[in-house]
Image (cartoon, rainbow over all chains, first blue to last red; front, side, top):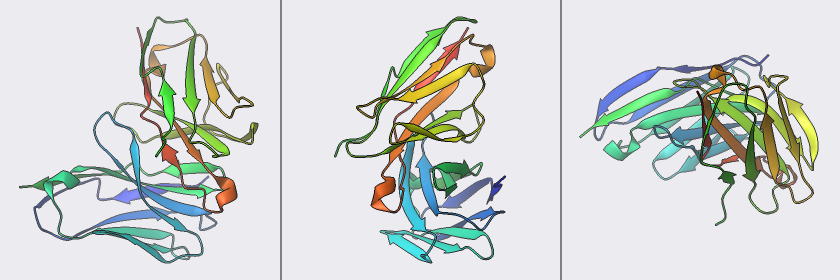
Length: 110
Length: 114
């Protein structure tokens, strides 16, 4: 069974800092990897999708990389803002089955 | 753009009652997923459907069943409800035919079992 781990579990940074969130998975036979953002009590918002054949994806201040062979993905957030405060989840899929990590709770202080 | 629709948004039931949650995927999406998220936990995959057929099964209790209908909407039926079933239930949809299977989540149904 796929195990997904996210480090750190929580992160508090001052506004403007660049930061990196980590996601690792045990089975490299994945179909894709997706990063989500979740605000308290809300649904999940898709941030970036990396297909298994890709190395990275970028959207605005976000950049996600994927290294399948080592079972790792990172989400890089540039120039963090208080509005970025949320829980960030990574999910890996094998076709139509997805496994989530437990998330990194980010707090960006003004 | 159209998003995934879930109904109801909130549901309160008593123990041993039955609940039905509904999900309407994004138009032209062929795959639907159901997840359960307990307080402070990550979403747990329950079940998925591709083109109205069950595709994959996760940690779905035997008391739960689901199906996808001809119009692609899906229903999660939960019987003999227990206190531990109180959670956020998410539905997501994707287009497997599009080649990337990016999931889009609905707002969730918050189920409270008293």
